[in-house]
Amino acid sequence: MLNALIFDVDGTLADTESAHLAAFNHAFAEFGLDWHWDEPLYTELLHISGGKERIAHYWKAKQPELREVDAMARQETVNRLHELKTAAYESSVNEGAVSLRPGVLKLMDEALAQGVKLAIASTTSPVNIAALLRRAVGPNWQMNFAAIGDASTAPVKKPHPQVYLDMLAALKMDASQCLAFEDSINGLRSAMGAGLATIITPTRYTAHHDFSGALRVLPDLGQVDLAQLRQWHLASQGAPCAA
Image (cartoon, rainbow, N blue to C red; front, side, top):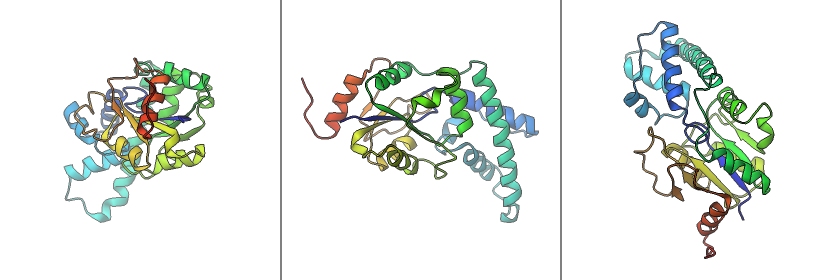
């Protein structure tokens, strides 16, 4: 039986990556760096989960000669850049630069009306999640979710399944009772690593990923309702679907 829907945030609930890219570049400029990420570069960097990790990976690739003795100073700079980036992203969301993807809010409302629990399994920062959902759902958005996992609660980033395992434990459910929603290969590997059947809704940043093993790959959730999800979920558990 399908008892919970577990959603990734960036790229899945909303196509946020263009806003994140602009926020990274804003942070670099504000800090006085000559770094600038264009869309092709950022698409490659999205294979690295986590904003701080993405910055650190790029820096090491750009300046491989940096000594380990400089590691602490480098991490302090990464942390500051990420703070500036987060503030810029939150501001852009508050100004309406990002909205939920088609079908997301309708599906959430339908699930809540039928007693299906909602959860979030993201490795983005809690500030980013709150900025997006506060504007899209309202100030009491957290009341819609039975469990929320983010970068503060699951420090081991996707594709590791930590955040999904944490959400299953918080929900007190087996993986067989839930569906995950993701947009990237790292997200898919994370969810599948926790034993979850997974629906993929790619963005232009992730459309080239290999989604082998996904339950379904859809352009968005606009044409999907809970009854259809129940059928697909039932089939994923090896049970026959109703005609």
